[in-house]
Image (cartoon, rainbow, N blue to C red; front, top):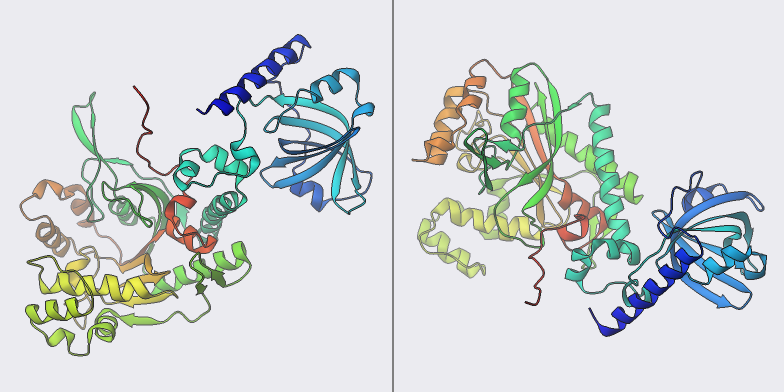
Length: 482
């Protein structure tokens, strides 16, 4: 803590003592009957009496006339205080206020000479005394890590942060209402699981001492949601927190939010139509249009139709029409010519997938559905009837990243068991045998989809990092002096 901040905090504690000497509780009780700044603006009427509570974020001293701004979740509103009009005790309280204090006021609405909507204060109540000053004299936090570590200050001082996080809140609400409007049922599945299934990822592990058993934080809810299909719940979804013990980047946080939905008697094409309708509707509802400016100056265009392209065709477009006729060495040489770094010993499928991730997924700004991926990449999807080397899936790419995978789900328990065994190799303990037993009772043909809520929120708000749309992203502990 700097010397200046320590000095300011000492002054505020002196004011705290003075307030208590006046018989004022600096951390007072409720202030009911308030309207938000948005509600006041929406119901504006000259002379109407209102009650407003918020944080004092600006103060312009003009002698007897005092102009302040109170800020709540919806925004800021100016309040006007005439010192001589305040009762003696309230005037004493007013003189002990600082930026950051939380106030409750009652008064009437009026427009200033410059036309700014304002509240003419008739009574004032201190609700909370702020003992620490706001950052940088109210110019806001600038350093990115400081903003994420001190999200409370970021929300107070940075309007763009408030907007991005508010959009995320409204996005989750929209998705929930959209799916419920399609007769999907929202459910909850375990976040601690005995087998980390439903995706290929490294889990976080923990231990339940009372039961003497090791558990994993879930990497996906898929296998539990499919058991509900077996049980007769034909349209289910979950907005869930997943945990993957992997790297952190602009697009990855170890704890993240996914939507997963399953629809009996549908398929991957039905799920593609569903997710396209949902995302376009969310964009229209939350941003007012289908063209959204991104942080790098590019424009994301969600206008229909969203093209659908087979995996092989998409790779061939960027790597050459003869790509799949090349041997492994030829693929590796071509990939290097395309500017990709190749680890030694990669198989042909792995080289192809690298080309796909970097040159197809990594360059597609506007939405495109990539379909018919190699069967080895997606062990939980149904094999294509015409070409069993691929599966009936889509990957929705937009903003140069995958946003949503969708499958025609595998419901053959024998084929599923074999593909699980092939996936885990010698680690048979990683196979969810209870899920396989559930499949043996018969799961209807179904479509399923996942949707990265954090990533979609990034794109709709136009920010450049997943941390901007997660209230408290994972950070290393702050270093402290010994």
